[in-house]
Length: 324
Image 1 (cartoon, rainbow, N blue to C red):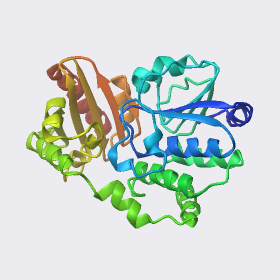
Image 2: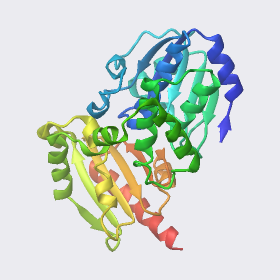
Image 3: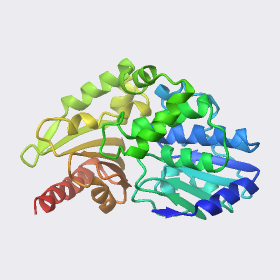
């Protein structure tokens, strides 16, 4: 855990303008943290612009402020304070990386154990279930009055990264924070439906493609699925519709490690890992990626077959090493 909390509080209080950004292909934690932090800073008189590389997944469009998130390159003002949320390394900022990394002050807020501590000031706590937990505590330290908009964004952030509070990263602190957020009139049933249950038809068409190509390895302890940009477009799915598909590989009985390959083009493959017991943050780290012990990923720049063979070799080794 690395915390420059007092320096960050002082910096935020003394700064007027902020750029906020979450990582590429954002999940609920990155979007929820981004919107909550943005609303919180505006409420204390700060000038804020929010960004994410790509687009906000449509299932989070109901959150207030989602339609104000910018996606395009900007002519950055290096004197504006940058706050980078839920991103373990600058590469996850995509095409916006150079603009943000040129800022004179960079505040790095995250909970990934693989965070590279790239900020001028770093508030990184791997014991937090979600970046949303860290943002909640920081906003309170800044004297921000939590309102329904902030509470809803933080609820989305924390509930998605804990799998609706069923993952092992859920802690007593998680539940205490959620209990506080619920006092602002949130509807857990409605939010859960939007986040976890309600999916566009395109998602299921894409899932069908993934399951049709299911492969099993290592005595059925590794399940592998592959999707491509062409498949996604054929199904009418957005990049955000990829979220959650990898879980179906890990959830097969007897499977220890689920892997999803997403082929962007003939020289770029995104890889997602989910596990029951294998530390996939270590596995992803060997492949220049990162994440959590049970959910991680990487992006490799080579043809699909080369990437697949390399990843499988490392995955089988991880299983073997775990068996001892």
